[in-house]
Length: 52
Image 1 (cartoon, rainbow, N blue to C red):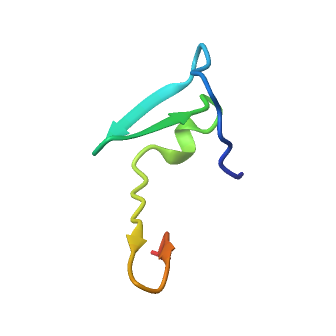
Image 2: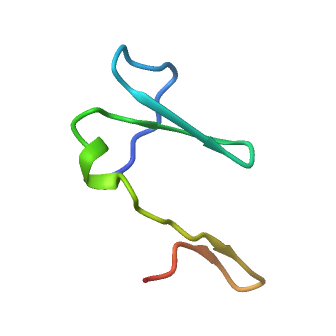
Image 3: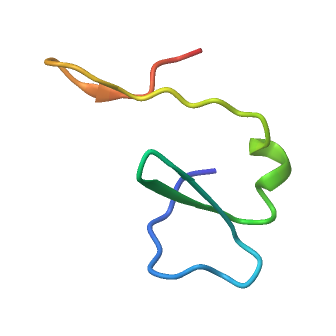
């Protein structure tokens, strides 16, 4: 599963917003991502999602 950029919210998409970032989650993926924590690191060398 990979993220896709979209322009508008689908009828059943779930909108999650935190610290000014908006994420739309497809209802098929919702049960997979419930309770998931994602960290994003932006330092001098790179910007990335570090492994858990």
